[in-house]
Length: 58
Image (cartoon, rainbow, N blue to C red; front, side, top):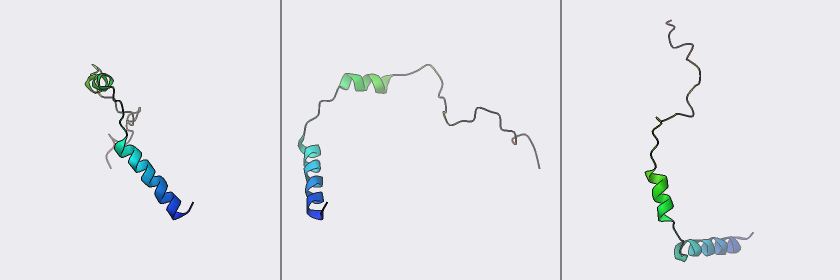
């Protein structure tokens, strides 16, 4: 795709994003942001196993 066509496509997309109106479901957003779990924060990247080198001293 040439630079002219590419620029025109980007301009078209930018105009759509700038001028189009989008319907926002504020009640769903409020439920999502306001939802609080009683569970404590769970780190999904934490190790499931104890650190085997933690207690050893050099």
